[in-house]
Length: 211
Image 1 (tube, rainbow, N blue to C red):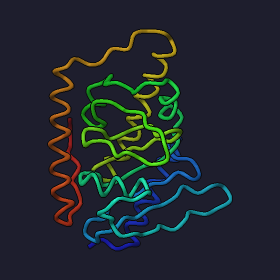
Image 2: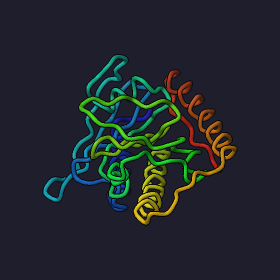
Image 3: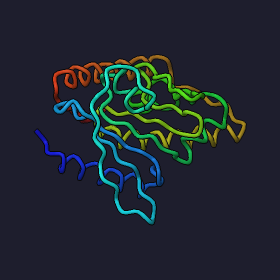
Image 4: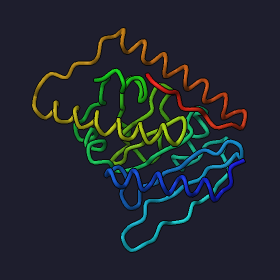
């Protein structure tokens, strides 16, 4: 079993990587499911006046919770890590006023068929085929594990930038062909089912190499 110190070190490294790319700001939160401990480890991105904050641990909650991280872990067995942040292009999708459609095959493969919009004080956890959403002025991004989450956060920001620029230019935004969406989404669903099974068994999910 991985020690808490090792988990904390991994989360601090992830915060540094995301912050260096502008994908985490002070006050944004990153969490990871630790299935072998039946716990959640969470860290908040520090500001210039505060050193790297310690990791906060909490038990996995099987019921409803007002906390979005715990609510997602309870409802989505496939999710192994969550980023709740204020990425520049990601949250700008909310100002466009409509969900971001499937623009690229890699987007569908890892983020799902669309990036929906949500509002209100309580989060409605999206279905399994959705790994990112814009909730008011925040962005939630999911991954089956911490490394997959880091890649998903980077992918989301790139796709969001392309979408927002295309929308504001007045050009028509086209989705990838239906058969591409079908194949890519089936592969995502397969990976999610495997991740959920491993998490239920007290094991970490395994990132798949390649497409």
